[in-house]
Image (cartoon, rainbow, N blue to C red; front, top):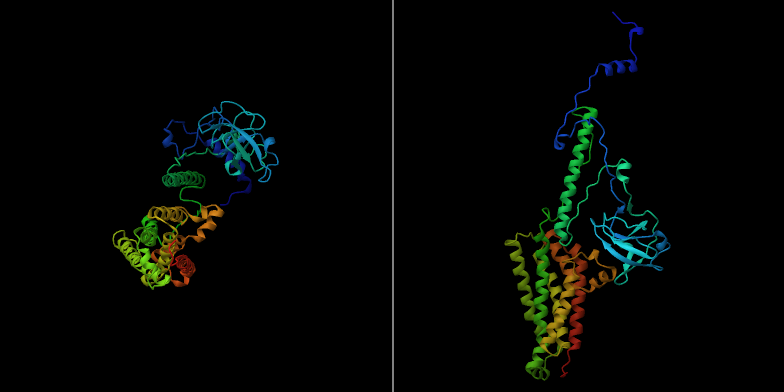
Length: 416
């Protein structure tokens, strides 16, 4: 038997009857840790603003926008720095025209300031003075008092790490971000399941990262090949820098001057024993790296020896050149360290070359250690061949021939 259309209820009437039949559940108090997934009995109202005061959104200088209007690299605006205010502290005074206060992220903005200039847009001009090189509008880089809660935004979690140990700080911040992200995802999924029903979850994107050539991101795989280049450079420089100047100090240079050998033969005789020591060092450290530290060597060992030959031509040539221009062994030793330490710092072994200033990056092209590091890591970790490594190998060969040529011409069979 079918029902008549007049007996049917509209959607609004049906909803009204359902709501009338419902009885609200009694409210209960539970610990905050157990409140996830429950519905609040009444709105939670914050008794204070968040943030409680206007603060800086980043590290920089709080100032008046009118004082930096039209600022540029060509026409900077000079400001007097009145004080430094770290996060958690309060400024002791307001600022006036031509004044600024250095702030850390989250520090309160002093009275009178209406903008914050990022540190990247400033230049230090000595104690108590800073130059602003970027125009700033009023309200830039500020978090106004109460803007988060009044705008209905979610609360922000601030993590402050000790940056003196940058490696540890980076690891801690990475783990903290992952934990916060997982918790936020769990909250969103719980809310979605309550709205759409159990078992109904939205699609999501999961990042599956993979590191090539150093799958477990082992630091020893990165550093051990670099140690080979550094040890070979130090030993060959030290030995060859003493070769000629020692002859001068002990007085045997006169016997060489009257001998029938040519400068090229003399240079070859001085470099060949040290070259053999360099080869022995490369093979020894490589063997220790492979068998002791378990660093993989995926490339060709003969290619490694060829590249080592080009590298030794450069380091031996530089060491002999230092020996020809030095008058004492102490002077030669100091000259070696004067060259060695900048070469290590500008090689990319400790600091990425891409993060160096442009002028310094250009100087690294004259550093043989830079090219040999690329070759070593390419052979050990990537299994690269000549087709990939010929540019740094060609650079080492050119530098080696040039330094040996200069050293040979610098040596004269006359007493200086």
